[in-house]
Amino acid sequence: MAFPNLSTDRIHRARWGKSWIAGRILDAHPDAPPVVVTDTLKNALRIVALDQRARARGVRLGQSLSDARALAPDLDCHPADDAADRALLLTIAAWCERYTPLVALDAASGRDHGLFMDLTGCAHLLGGEAALVADLEARLGAQGFHVRLCLADTPGAAWAMARYGQARIIPEGAHGEAVLPLSLSGLRLEPALVVSLGRVGLKTIGCIAALPRAPLAARFGARLMQRLDQALGREAEAISPLMPVAELSTERRFAEPIARQEDISQVIAALSAGIIEPLERRGLGLRRCRVRLFRVDGHVSALEVQTARPLRDARMIARLFAERIAGLHDDLDMGFGFDLIRLDVAHADPFEGAQAEMMAGNAGGHGHDALVDRLGARLGLERVQRFVLADTHIPERSFGREPVARLASHPGARRAASGAAALALLPDLPTPDAIITRPLILFDRPELMQTIAEVPDGPPLRFRWRGASYEVARSEGPERIACEWWRDGRGARTRDYFRVEDRQGYRFWLFRHGLYGRETSEPAWYMHGLFA
Image (cartoon, rainbow, N blue to C red; front, side, top):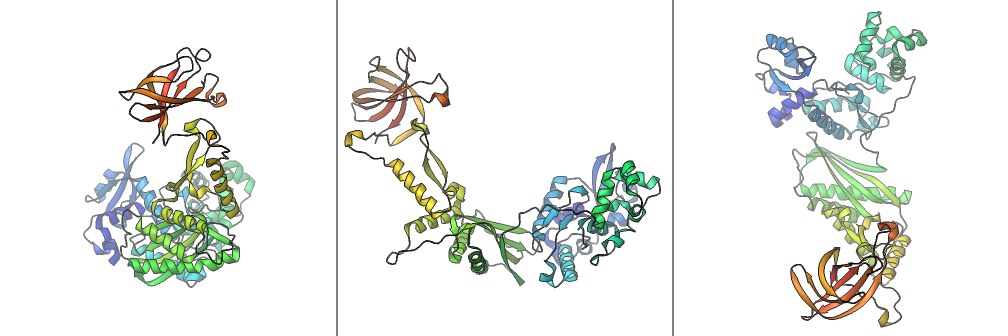
């Protein structure tokens, strides 16, 4: 599929807005000047793209702008914008996924923009190959794009016929004969190589198809033979789709576009119910699913939700998408309405059901997971986090945060993780004297302070912190925490922690950094936390 006028089509669409919905831009605006796109090539400003009106006035690709203005003084010139062209092509590619999930960019074309679509097993869904090609061409034409299509057995043959041939559908097995009369440029060769072949009288694909391969490869390179074999089907050519293929997918098409939020929610609920039975057959539960809404003007909106556990509840899936829509900063842009809505299961994990208690309502774990899913749908699942313990005894390193969704999807593993966290937070305490108290507020980084203390190992008598002075009324400690030399190096120092209370009743957690006389002669003091 080739878009010979993509750059100028983009300019027309930006200029005339939505007026192209009613018909072709050139027909709707007969007085519009011809449009060309220019770029600096070979030290001159040259034409790199042009519309049909410019072509009708005699302007051609590669022509200098001064020569083109001599033919058409009213040319409307625009600078080349490859980034905008690529963004528009990606938008078209996303919209083309309504026909097949295997849509790839034609990377070899450069500014000769194009797409590859693998329609194997998809044509019958739209009434056959001819109906599919006609529908695709009509819809793209209604969006204001000039497109050349060809359906063939191989990507190489389709590429060549779309640009240099006339047939829109090549019968199965006839692609070899169909491409023989075409120019050698149809093999996706470099222009310099095509010129070199032309100098020796080789103008068409048929001229080299029957020639001995070894002399051709020796003189013109192996790339020539590879492209020939790909076009004729002698060598397989894979395309790299832009989006990974979903494990399961279901969709709903509409004869008339829908544009009401209630209708979209009902369709998503119906699609969610339809995906449950295939998941049950495979013993799976979805972890990530995506809804894509195809607008009639070519725009595609995507909504994605993730779950903290494998899910197989249609009502919950629909509710998550409702939360996702509610969490958007802006409402969905309905435009002229959506004529296709698709639900894709992007990732699924094995689903193991749990035996529910007869007398209980909803299990506590299910309620927790449902809450996480709803929060994740509205805020983003990576933002719903939990505290986790770390294998260290340095206080500021003893815990961290991670998304709740990273918990193991297996119910037993999830219970084991929760139990481990509970045991770590509530250790076995044989006597009240064994309780190690920690402050309610722990600073991310200890803050340096000035203090007067008993040496070598005594508690502080008074200290100054954040510009205020405090006099210690009572203290408890020290609690000695050794350094982690394997992480901080051999220069790391020991910490002696004290719990102190000033004369006004404020309680602090501070430490002396370094053993006096053994690690340092002037130990520093740091404030690390506050008690309630």
